[in-house]
Length: 291
Length: 291
Image: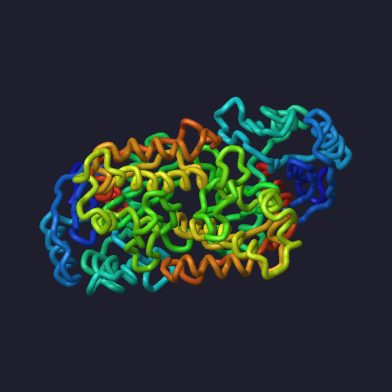
């Protein structure tokens, strides 16, 4: 379907708990939006397809997926979710399913790379050299855009798995990452916070030490993004970041760590998402390869 | 001067202790090479110019400089060494000096980005998606190439200044970085090693705990490069890395940290420079903008 010569695109933000679907004529011109819960692959992918079919003919589809995923176009596994612990989804050929069903070009990347692309192009990163999008929720993930392109490297970033220096008041907790124990995700994700203090961060009083500890670890990620890549804009999103005052604490702590040393100076900024909850979906539409 | 229609390029690897100069028809086809000690800017830049003039007419010049430097082409300070502690060199317009003197196009980047470009194109990174070049010597610096391009971000990487987790047997030393104390450079550079143990790492017996401590910190940088950018090839060069067994220890420790988690799997490699001491100079020649 096209309106006044514009091509209709589909976008999927494929998450572990829900799939968000949209059609639009541009990443920020969304016409219809729909959510379905993530069940087993057969059910979920069929439901998604049926919704798209009801919207008319899409000309291209972009998929922003939870990971890990295969992004190497030369691999037979391109477009698959690979070794996820999520039951049933291991080695699921998400891109292939929709390519078969719709016969249109498919774009595919991680959910966080897509969100980073959207924030870079249409949100907090407009006019900047580079942007990182970090989500702090059930897990911790991050996407990177440098010079307008998402960074893949040998696969894709998994920046929740760096090892922050332990806070003096948080020496005992072993961390909950099944792979790395007390990596950033193992210390700072929503479930890691619950494992230590029994409740979410936003349920703890503002003077509880947990706020300082969590901000310290996230600020170490920000510091590393600045030191290692001179990333200009660092966007922190996700459920944990909706805790009042947390972003400000992270920003303050990262400044302390940097000690005014880095040559990018005041260009480096730590901010909330501009596109709020829509970064991933807008990014999915940006991935749709319109030729 | 041109030979059989080929254009002669100049390259400068501008270091804090010496300037290495070369002319060549390609980055790996060096015709003449010359070293001068780094004195004050007026003396050093004049000596470098005189050498180039004696080689014939260069058509373009690439400069790979110690930093921090200004890389923003839209800044009036582009091509300057900026707030270096090196006496006399603060705010030195290196690129402008040679542009005035030779009237040819000038390329300018950090010494480590140039080395990363050279290793990516002509050395250890041939055919790879991405490469980091880390030098461990008087200081610790790193350059990054992703998708064939050097990463600048808001300025340029300063990856010596991440904060590694302290080793259990190295809790007391405060570190020597004037800005960050016990950051990676403050703990692991040549002078930091001397400050702790009185000698260089290669002078300590192979079973001395210093080898494990230094390898641990450098492996944390490698782990972060893999986690944050999925960097495929990590090249460790510089004086400290000539310590017997160190690269192998770093590689082993980084594997332990990764715990086979990262989706790039065995693509990630930790290696020595392929171009040995010539990466920076070859990279300088690669920066020369031949149109």
